[in-house]
Length: 490
Ligand code: FUL
Image (spheres, rainbow, N blue to C red):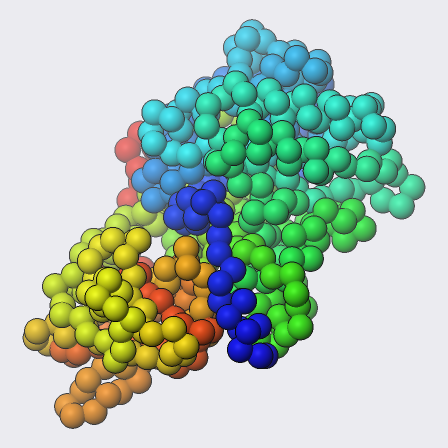
């Protein structure tokens, strides 16, 4: 690539809403609707609303569990493919208003948004474009209906951090064809909730490409612009409910942003990845899957690969028909949060002295990586593509997690790095990695040394680091003894 092409790629930056969203890191997906009562994954749209009756529904309980897992937001399926609305929409009869729950006066969207608000979690909505119930689907009127629903959701429930548009459509070759007015939908979201990101079939957040929790080794946020419309193409979307889709990994598109992948691409955009998967095999609760809840270790692996690999982690946790998160899921989540809290309780780098092989100016010196301020950052002079930052702990120090963060408001630049420890009179490499981006968490066998060096081996135009964190994980997963959260039967 030419220098000017590299510089162009290095200077693609996120929007303010993308920056805010990225910092959430880990948040919940909640699949809840008629399917919760019928045992299906995709409802037909013909279900009677009278089936919906979560008698013990308690959104505060959901939010308590999510918060103790370390999650910072929640996205609720306000309407899934079956078309049943969890809020009393004025534009359809197919909603909670026709159900026995709270005598038809309930509003799940309201209860959940209020619980999030109270607990300091961000709230987002999933609104399925594909609707198997509404007879307007397949006609221009459906777009009006869909937009009216967006207006309701984005006006009546406070701040919304995300609108999640699913690309799935199982209509098949002879089914209904809806020409979605995506631009019209996006305009309404920008008008009513300018801080909300539009995910998957939208321009702000990219689907990672699978539902299994598989993460790329090198996840770039700067990618070809044509990826922004990929999930909107009906022919490429999920077309069958075969139970395999949720565990299928698409490996065909592993490299979206390396120099090879973006060579000659004029239209580069900031389009960061979100990893979405379910804590259970299905997206909705099924009692017969109570024994198949992912373990703390499994979730930790995905967490480290996603949050620690320049993506966010959207973990689905489906409430049961009573309206509560089942104790199996709650136990795992509370313990996951406990491991994460213990691991990252104390940043040893804050007590170190930082120096760098090269520094742009005093405002960007090595101290910026240990000052706890995400907005300050170290960088070498422009055009310096490899440089080192060194931490001296002042004495032998044992650690097993190193967390690197680029100053992504300036772009994503680092392509290859290594971590080296000073052992005796030699620098010993303990890890080599590729991209960093928002966050790279490196897990190591416990290592003891006085000096740690972060070597940026390759980067685009000029690397930045806003933070180097060093932790001694007292909470290694092997040590976890599962504790049932308060209020649950063991
Ligand atoms: C898929 C849907 O078909 C599933 O039911 C689920 O909502 C998942 C997040 O997306 O495409």
